[in-house]
Image (tube, rainbow, N blue to C red; front, side, top):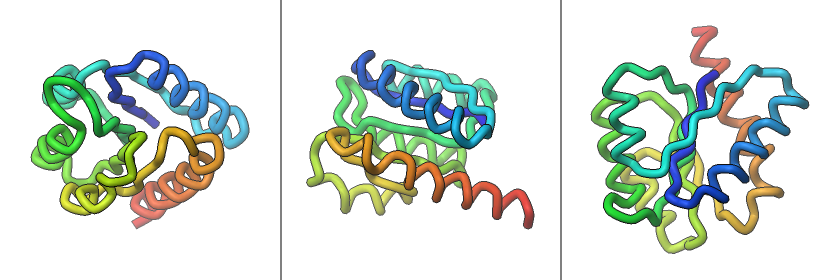
Length: 130
């Protein structure tokens, strides 16, 4: 399963990648993780046909914010789960406008990440069975 992480902070990309790797070591799903430092870079990869199954997307980024990136992703890929990740809860309602699958607060990732991944992977499995 291909996972994209888009965040302008390298430390946050590394933290999410570590959480994904830890989850994968316990669940044996087989994730391939790609990190992107800008929405434009990630959108270009999607436009070029890079396969993606799950996207973790920071909301507060320079140049193009995560909600704008999410709207553009929806133009290209209607079905991919987008998990919005931020430090600010005040964007939660905007996540519905881009049909975000989940909304995670960076300070709570250690607690909320495994349940989020269980839900997202379960949804993907259901789609594959249908």
